[in-house]
Amino acid sequence: MTLAINIIKMEKLSKATELIEHKESGWFNGKRYNVGHLYVWASEKFPVEDVCVSDLQNQLEDQKFDSIPFNKIDMNKPILLSHTNHIIDGKHRLYKAVTENHRTIKAIRLPEELPIDTEL
Image 1 (cartoon, rainbow, N blue to C red):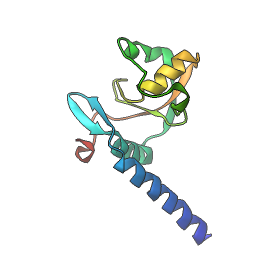
Image 2: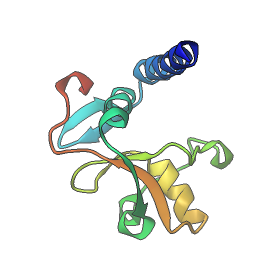
Image 3: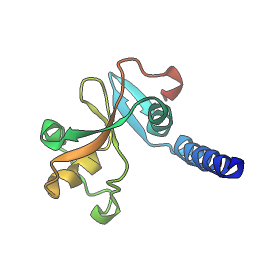
């Protein structure tokens, strides 16, 4: 049993390290955040919820989504939403959800105050 728990902890640590080393950034309230850090922090504190795609799709206006091949967009990863429903990370996933007529998308809703160590 201890071995299984240790393996799970190692897998979480490995995934956390992978996310933290991820250098992608997201913007909110004039600040730039390391989304890898935000995912690690948020996944330990907040639940994944289903959010209506129609409530978010207005954030796709004037966006181009040709930087990632459509089939490479991972719909299993939740998007990151601010407390005001601003997409901090996940517009490609929302674009795919809209294109494929999904009614909901997985999201982690963040609080108003974000940890300073997630800022870039």
